[in-house]
Length: 465
Image (cartoon, rainbow, N blue to C red; front, side):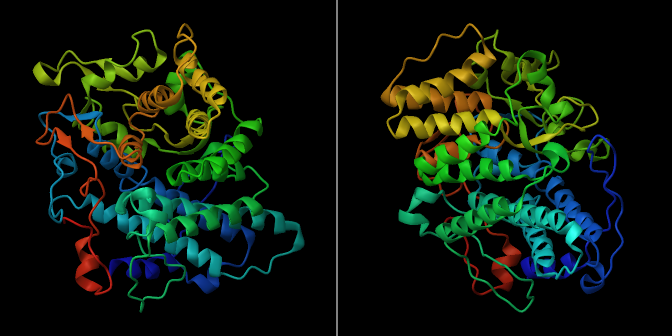
């Protein structure tokens, strides 16, 4: 069973060099040693946790698949005529996906990351008092990252939290120790959310440092992730609490103009709360290569999304006309990740999302003025001449949803926003086989990998696959 076999892989933790005065994470080829022999000094923990950051950055996870699969299932992507990678997710194929196996790799890489984290948690540190603060910070990052990974897995392989009361429907297995004899069943979505919240909350209580800038987990980053989790749960009070903590920390500020355009390529902007660092070596396996003409160029922006954006809005600079496109494929490409060497940084969570999370929570709990103020922050940052929001009630909620679609486009959000809002998928500018998918959508989550269901009698498949 691959989920549990990865526990063996995790024992061989990487020796990784953390270097450079500008907080870059330089990831070097690793050597393998036994877990018992490895964890002796604080440097061993520092190297091990960087190995986890490297793990979640790969193309099968944050580096490409997590966002691309989600966006392809949504409304804002159309397939280029040459597209074949990930096409099965655009077409909502109602069978086990056996072509490219991207859903299998995301599952495997997520659980490998969890097992790496579990091994760090199980290790016993007997270091001097002088490094205890460093140790606590690292362990806080460990717990927060485990919570993030569980949340990523459950939102991709399980229906949204409010699909049933209290998230009582199937989620993903919770595995907290690397025992290769286990044949785990799927926990409920509610149980996985509880685990993710517990891990993130514990991580917050342990973290007091900022290491690696926006490329490493911090207490504020964990609070930001919790604001998203509580949003999905419709726990509006906690969305506001977590969002307030992030915004009032004073560590982050929205960027404007060219700085907005550059933030995805340069990284480390004042708006970045937590992001994945890519390097030139990622090449055509990176997310941007799936959109750019200099890469695979398989996917294009849907025209109906572009029609929603004012031409003077800075966010229109996330798109670029390609004279080589014609007919139904003309004429723009997504340029949110513009580096020709695919060294752009991938945002996990940005300050703009926190404002939009809080705006929705305010609107749904009756604080209309607060919701309007937060929405104005994002709308007028993109276009300073945009009129102030005066909408109320459902019109205000619709305006927030529209702003999320524009601001967070191509960052893996739209399908989750549609499903948690119990809305149909309506692809106005479709080039694939399916233009409409009504809610509830059984194919808007990924199938459990077939190797799991074949080898584990306790593992059930998602409906329809």
